[in-house]
Amino acid sequence: MTYWYYEDEDEDDEDDDFFEDDEDVEDEDDDDVYDDYEEDDDSEWLRSAAVPVDPSEINVMFDDIYGYDNIKTALQRIVDMANSPEKYTRLGVRMPYGVMLYGDPGVGKTMMAKAMMHDMNRPVYVLRKVQADNAFLKLIGAVFEAAAENAPSVILLDDLDKFPAAYGSMNEFSAVQAGIDSVKDKEVLVVATVNNMDVLPNALCRHGRFDRKIEVPLPSIEDAAVIISRYLVGKKVARDVNMKAVAKLLDGYTCAALDSILNDAGMFAGFEGKDEICMADIVRAVLADIYDIDSTSALPLEGKARTAYHEAGHVAAAMLLNPGSVAIASVRGKPREKHGFMETIDSDGESYEDTCLSIITALAGRAATEIKYSSPDMGSSDDVYRASRMCDTLVEDVCIKGLSYITREYESDSDNSRNARNVQQTGMLEDFYNNSKKLLRSNWALVEMLACALTEKETLICDDLDAIYADYVSGKGVKENMIPAGSGKAAQAPYGPVNS
Image (cartoon, rainbow, N blue to C red):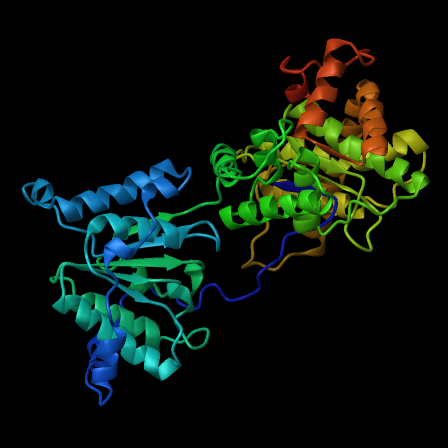
């Protein structure tokens, strides 16, 4: 989702280039590392610890995974290759040496890996970082040795990125590399789940070790709607619960988060003695879990009205420029914050037009407040900063004002160059702001309708907002100079001069 009002993006200053070289620099010592942990006085304990799991005992199947059809198909293809090898050997095709599932925590990577292993009918060896560092290094070698002796088999390296004892440590990764190389001709499939790819050395991730790397993204809105409907099975749900609306509310969150929030909604309903979970309970759970907002405390009317116009400006601009894009808007803010928020559904668009619409929407809260109250909006500093950063990108990186304004990290920047860029960026920001005010003035009735509804209900979700917009378009609101939905006029709103 895109969040308008305050910065919610954490900048990661860690050195992502710790492992810079794509070459197998570490490969020379791999055999030595593996041998160090192959022979040990604890060999009997290691063999008892490296006990396989019977695939019939794995109670996860592909039917238990909702959505993610493309990923399930890719994994089922590997399962078919393991179960019917003759179909592929006649084509000269071999099994992948390794399969890596990577993505955010909570998206279901381990569940997908288990479903694949359930269908492969091979003994499964599971490696997780639960032992002390030295014992774990020894266990890595023992597991690969046991898997080779009991081939065909599968090794699951669960949360592979958490194997090292400390950031930058290569011992565990080197042991895994040596293990993979030692079983390449033994019909052992290595499957890994990874949360953070950046900590893995390139030599471990390369083809020939992990031939298939499959990203497991956050669920799409369509997948989320299916997941939510399945999570609600067995729960008493009111008829007013719209799965697609709930999916929009939870756009950008993991499957685990969806389950937790829906469970909290049931807790709210149960505490109040309700017989069903209604949409209001889900919205309340979203406010509490995602935004840390208590929806029961009273808000002062004067501050609520001003905040309502600010958020109505954001919502009106977003709906006029991209109808149906707003997931939720509220006059309630996080603890110790006086202002509300609006979230839009993220799109995959990264075009110049998309950026322009984002800037206009970011500035629309300030524009609406100043139009209504004829005074500066003291709660718009983060919005202005966000819009300014996008203008900086357009001038310095995209060079829409000319190639002479590009910034080069390897060259010193003169005062004249910086001043010239600042003039262009500031002028562009001013143009966008004027266009934002022009857009809202031309559709002020919509802003008033939204502000009134926000003042009354405090929080509006996509169904509420879409109904208000439909009323505005159909004539139940004042239509003077409005931009009808789907007319294309909104998308052609002036963005300011492109060239100097």
